[in-house]
Image (cartoon, rainbow, N blue to C red; front, side):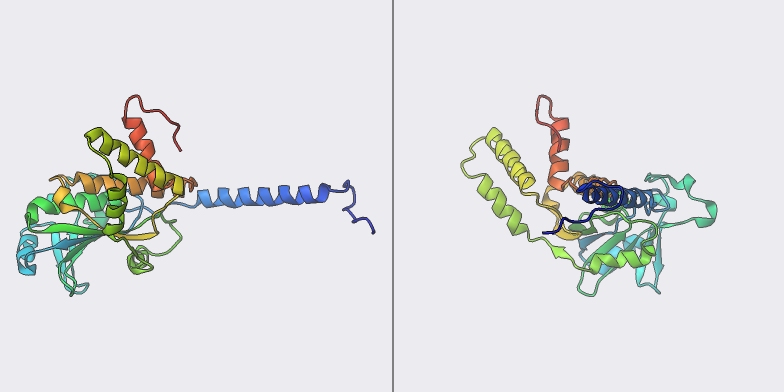
Amino acid sequence: MAARASKPGLRPGEDGGSARREETTATMKRTAKAKQRPLLATMTMEPFQPVRLYYRIPDRSVVVRGLRRLACMAEDPGEGCWQWLFHAEAASLRFGAGYEDVPEERRPIILGRIRFPESGGMTLQTNSIPRAIEGARFLGPRLGPRVIATRLRLVNRCFAADEGAPDELMKGLDRDVTVIDPRWAEADLKEALVGARSTEDVARAAANLLERKLASGEEVPEVEDFPLAPEEETPDFRELATTLQFRLVRAVEHWRGNTHLTLAAIIRNTVLKATPGRGGPPV
């Protein structure tokens, strides 16, 4: 059998290694170029990330009366929505940047849009996680306890500035949506709590459940729709804020290239940092 010819000036076997090195170099260049792409951010300097909150309401007319009382709310019949403006009562809110950081010629910017779907209820749609959290906190005391956030939908990723116009990217909230059935989580939790008799047993079972999710590599879908637990929520929407902030951390880490970090890993690392004496390396 004839010997395989090698490239001039190379010893047999060197050509494959060189090709692999060239491929690795090309991959590194592509990765570096991707990291140089500017992150799409809002006018108040948060990562652009579509979010929609779904509310149960007593009656549309009741909510509209509440919105009319606010100078930061403007009805837009053309879009069929109410615009929540960075203005008046909302001007004191802080995001990545404050009201004074927005150029005067761009004021007031739109923080979110409130709609009343034909199927009933109300939605608040924003283009960042911090705006969704502040929106829930802003509307809660102003619309009253009968206006209740019951579901959440978001896109679990960041975007580059050249991926498209924000209005078009917002439509991703209605594409390839994965709706989470709360019964799945309840079944997992019930199974984990079998035999738990004390507070320590419950905490240990919850930690073990998290570890199993971590080991499985389970990840969140790109477009996620899941129920909230309004009966467990606090007046300052601490549960909602925690839920969304973990997902924001994951989206930013993936943008930075740390795609091995799952939501479960981020939660575990946060718990380890916050718990004195807990060992184990971060993942």
